[in-house]
Image (cartoon, rainbow, N blue to C red; front, side, top):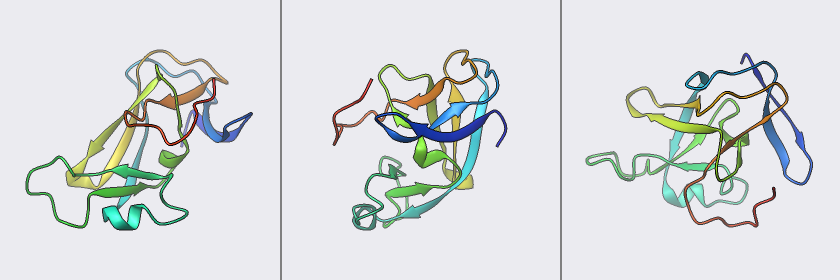
Length: 123
């Protein structure tokens, strides 16, 4: 992946940072996902990394309500407001990350998880 890398973020664990300037509206990453069931998504080791996937799409296959993102998808930390957003591409079984604004070198890329948080957010 160009322009991003994962690093240890103090107080947060792993996260994704910009290694080059990223323009607002730029697609930062597009990676495949592995669709899984809601029950599987709650398994130890997966529960913190599962994304909602197709649960609000009429006619979507049962047992694929969640997904595990490959690439760096599972490493973006939460922030509100965030500087990137997540887009789902159901037909290709992929998700992409798009910059909401210009992002500077060294800046952490963050997503608004848009769900009730199961942890206390850190700056």
